[in-house]
Image (cartoon, rainbow, N blue to C red; front, top):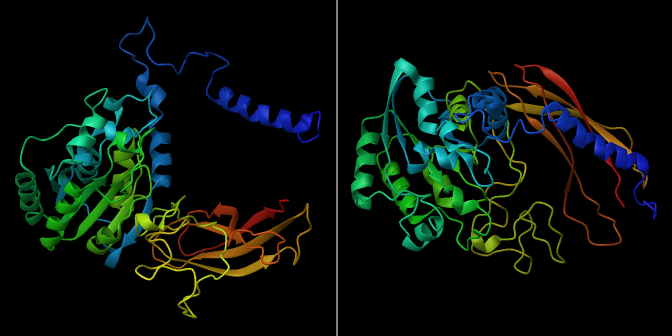
Length: 398
């Protein structure tokens, strides 16, 4: 503050944000209300009221990202027989993800439970584990270093795959939940290989060979290299670690009770060799232009240059068009701002929302600048076949 870099008004504003959150959480009334069971309540009878399940479900639904949906495989019908496959499909612990020390795994809703409850008596669910999260003993030992976090099925890999294939053959569609266990995307859990574990890749290949529609539900805490899985799956839904109400939220999207509108907050590379892969990278002296191929440019000769799924990507069950793009000014002063406005139209047959993103590129800067920068985004209202005006503001940065 003495140097003038931060004003008292800015400090007050930052403090106000923190205090507002504490007020909304009721911490001014009872500062210990969110610290778990008290000595006077060993059974923690108020746990459910503190979970805010409705809000947790809504937050989880909005975070899910639809990556692929070939021939409208999703949403699923609430009828027939569905095979749910994968160790992660029935793991309460892994729904919580890492850095959830205050979370109680037993309060989580798994994907299997969510699908069963959504389907009800209108159809049948067959579950098969299909494979261990990993068969790599070294990784299992690492994950179980301090606690028994990963349960290893004593059956042979082939026996588990055969069970999953049998379930798939009896079903109309297969939902395979694959990805990382909680501890694989945790503190001090870096990986040199970001493909799915071999056990799960073998399972997916066997399920694909049945010819049944294959939906992959991803649970992971980092971008994964999924080129093969993208080719094998009819639909791909990124769910991260969706939390306590994750199973219900995922089922909401799978069955179309909620239209996904999430966008990727990171880029998914095609291969580990592409890393670092991020949308706001600096340009090179000889940038690659796919419209004007040239051998001596910055590119890979054995793989496409761009990521498999780029930052900001995400599909919907409906379609949108963007028109009437307008800028409040043709120029932006050093310390000023510009507002961009557009018309967003739902051109599909169902309700849905999308996230409009504003990117800028500085082509005349005196120093190297990113090829593009996200400077604003806004979620459109959920609507059916209507035009909605949206505006986003970008502020100049020094």
